[in-house]
Amino acid sequence: MDDDVERAARKVRDVEQAVSQHVTRSGPITGRASSPDGAVTVVATPGGPPRQIAVSAAALRMGPQGLAAEIMRIADKAQRAASTRLHQTLERVVDPRELTELGFVRERDEDDFGWRR
Image (cartoon, rainbow, N blue to C red; front, side, top):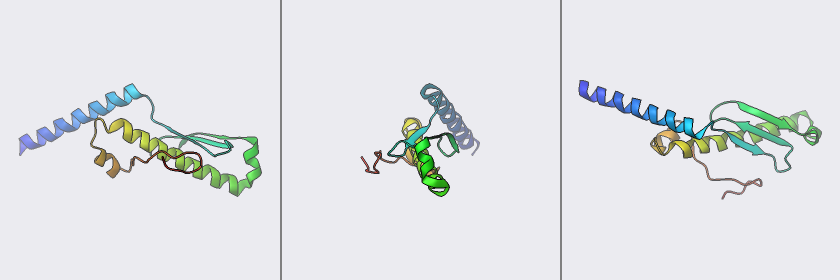
């Protein structure tokens, strides 16, 4: 039993080290999304709040509720892009099914009009 626990602990340490080294080499993992007209742009991290929100003067014409809804829509899109990038980056060192179970889903690319590629 102790041997099994030690092997499991060693595997966890090895995976943790591999992930840490891989992320260090790849740099920060973020996703970026913009509205089709470029009025709202969001940079987000996987599973975290937006890191950056840019709103053009034209976006202010949407009104408060419209602008809030657009920011939320674009932030969600940026976070999904970040999650996909995290998945793509770490699937080389972690079982992709485990990443999906943790909520980091790899989605297909989507263009500015919502078409999946």
